[in-house]
Each structure stands twice: as C-alpha cells, then as structure tokens.
Length: 361
Image (cartoon, rainbow, N blue to C red):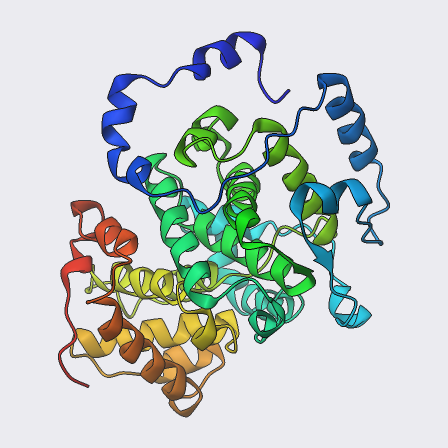
C-alpha cells in the first residue's frame, strides 16, 4: 500500500546481515502479543479513503478502532485540551539539516517566539499516566528505550524520537490504552515521525514489524497510524525540546569553541524523554534551556549568560529547578538498565559524550 509490489517482495525477508545487526533489538521480549486481525486488502483501502476525508476539527473513534486497540476514549479530558493548531511549521527543515539559514540569523527572535507559542498548544497532559489504568511510567520508559534502538538502527535523525514521543504522550493524554497495545502505538508513532522528518530513512512496515518480533501485523500498524492522526487532529508538527535546543545553539556563537557542548545538550535532551513523571511538567523550551545549562556546567563554563537569557527568554532562576532534575535523572540513568540512549551517544558521531559521568553537583 505504501510501496510498490516489488519493494514489498524485497522487504518480506530480512537478510541475515540485518538480523545480525539487530540481535540486540530482536532479543527484546515483545511488549505484547497482539491479535492477528485478518482484514481484506479492499477493506484497508476503504478505511484509508475514509480516514483521509475525516473532518479535521473532530476526533472520531469507531467501535472498530476500540475493538482493535482495546482502548477507551477518556471523556474526562476537556474539549479545550483537544483543540490544536493545524499550522505547518517550516522550521523543522532548519533544525533537521543542521545548517545555518537566513532565518536563524535575521528572524531568530521571531522563530523562538513562534516555537514557544506553539509548544503550549502541542504538549501532553503532565499527569496523564494517573488516568492510565493499565500503564506505568516504567512501561513508557521501556518503550521509548526500544524506540531509540529502532531510530539508531535505521539512522534516523534524532528529532524523530522526540516527535514520536510527543505523539505517544499526546495520544495517551486522550486515550486509555491496554499495555498489550503499547508497542503497537509506539511503532505507529515512529512511522509517522520518520515520514515527517526524513523520508529517506523511512523503514518499511515489514522491517518495523520484524523489530517487534512480529507482535503485530501491517494492518494493525496502518490502522493505529490512522487513529493517531485522527486523535491528534493531524497536528504532527509540534515544538520539541530537541528542535529548540538546536535553535538556541545555532542562534548564538558563544559555543563555537566548545564542539562537545551541542552533543552533550542533545544527549541530555534525549535522556529526559525516558522520565515522563519528572519532565512532562516542563515546557520543551525549559528542558532545552536547562540541557544547555547543565552542559555548560559539565564543561566547567559559566552556567548561564546574558546572551542565553536573551535568546531563550529564561533567567538562571527559571532553569535551575529543571537543571537540577536533569542532573539527578542523569545520575540515576548511569545505573539503569535502559541503555539505548547511552549507547547511541557513546560513538564517534556524538563525540563519545555517552561515556560522561556526573559524580557531583
């Protein structure tokens, strides 16, 4: 459906070379065993056509959706929280390329204002996990750790995991999900994020399903993808802490002599994704600013400067609480079993910053 027949045939059998590369991801126990729903190809086509014509100002969940996903719509959430912007952000291209643009120099204040206005619209509920009767923050962290492994296997841009996590949290803010469907939801969120951020690294459905130990089917992923789009009202261009972190760093030259600082800041921003209980309460701009602050502390630089305060809109007092939470979180992760992010940044590509240790304040 998403590929030509020829590509589908090529992707049905994963090569032994790929299997060897994926031995760590494949050894993971599937997060759940899903029911293999037998839907005819024609039914799937009709479902997609119907989904493409859905009114974008309404969220509609059908009985068929709840039967597949074993979830319920939580009507306790306010309608205001369901409202979302349909603006298409052109800033993603600026950040994903890693290249300076005219906008970065001339309009950096306007770009920051736009992103920070948008971040309040596209954020999940900080307390949504308390409404999830079958999920925990530990399950969420395990899922995100697996998702990081997937993004690294296909060499996706680091922004993909931040987008996918945003979709995941926003979806779970609105829908109660059974733990058996959590990995399916994460897979669909990754697929959407990879399509938006970098189509060249887009994995096939068969490759994604292989990494779930065949715990779901192509039809499952496609239908979940449709439901995520509808639930998020097709607003899939949120402001993330990674996008803002890159924007802040690219909009000032005070770090030009500190080549490791961007890598450390990105590393810390990725790590905050694992601890939803601690960091969902902060805005992405607060997390991005605090990651830069902690990075400067690790490099024994002045924690905060007037230039950074002007660029981010935050004073040192504004970022101190989040920065302390990041330091505490990072110390804990050094002994955690969730090592995908550490392994990702313990490579030459990221200056081996994953091997850094924090031993004191």
